[in-house]
Amino acid sequence: MKLDILAFGAHPDDVELGCGGTLAKEIANGKKVGIVDLTRGELGTRGSAEIRDRESAAAAQILGVSVRENLNMRDGFFINDEKHQREVIKMIRKYQPEVVLCNAIDDRHIDHGRGSKLVSDACFLSGLRRIETQLDGASQEAYRPKVVYHYIQWKNIEPDFVVDISGYNEKRIEAIMAYASQFYDASSAEPETPIATKNFLDSLDYRARDLGRLIGVDHAEGFTAERYLAVNRLTDLK
Image (cartoon, rainbow, N blue to C red; front, top):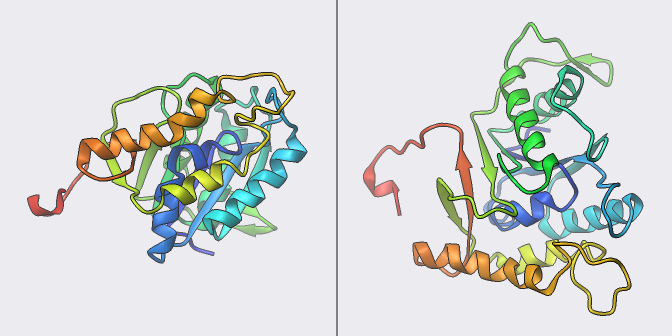
């Protein structure tokens, strides 16, 4: 299955938090979208890997993605080496996306920056035909996505561009809240974490509203790019 967009996240819920609105909008516009989680988030303070498996499946259904896979890398301990790069390369060659979205280049959680570099490096290496990979017993052809963009996560990194997600913020929030084990619940007896506070829950909306405010729309999501953004005409810019 060839996809238009393939979004990678170090943990289940990274993609929903960083670019859920953008994916929902692209899917509504007919694009085929997939998600690949690097780990099951088994080191998370709240919930469990099994709970997050169910939550990620529910979130994928809410967004309407065509496929979601998990590479079962070790949460907190995966590294950017050949072994892990090859696993990501297999996904890129399997789905041949035009666009790859991945974690923030620099962020509070060490897996985010590390996952960002792993996926970015794998996107380049995937285009080298002398790197041979097999999936389900069949050899894969070399393939390199056209662009790699990084969604913004915990840190308020200045975006290189923003996507208007007006009309899709509610679906984004719904997909995020599918991870009920991870976020604020006044009745929960689980330990508090930085993302399980009322302030963080409120930020899901006010951050998108603030980025939207800056471009004159209701809600937006921000991204950073690895190369210059190009347009054919000045009127392509909004």
